[in-house]
Length: 151
Image (cartoon, rainbow, N blue to C red; front, side, top):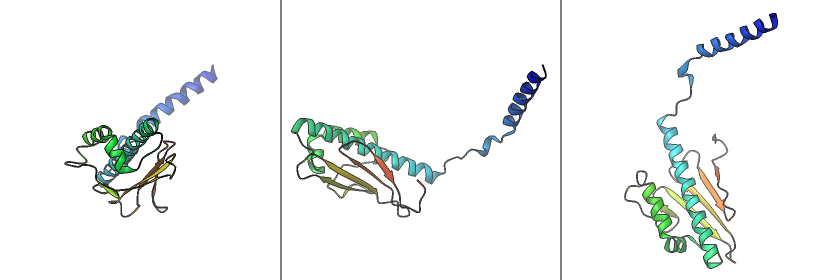
């Protein structure tokens, strides 16, 4: 009986202490953090689009393709991407590398045999931390910043 009372008291105490926790103690993203998050989401989304176009390119033509060929062969994917991100890129269109859209630098290397590629997409507006996202023919997307910045 005493054991049940101790357990009940402990549960009630935990619930009471939980109710006293300030509700405004949560981390609320600032405007800058929200902007950074949106830019990171943009980069990851663009790399997903590139990976998709490259996968179709490889299955159709037997090799991966450089940026300009991708944009030409798979205009529907990139047009859809621009439509989805219209709020971030008003009146934008894809250009030749390195600055494919305002503020974003693309470095794309296709292997000489066409059987692999690497893409580095850098945020040119992030002067402090140098945010970048990378991918390759495996389709895995990685993100990074300068070593002195939190990820």
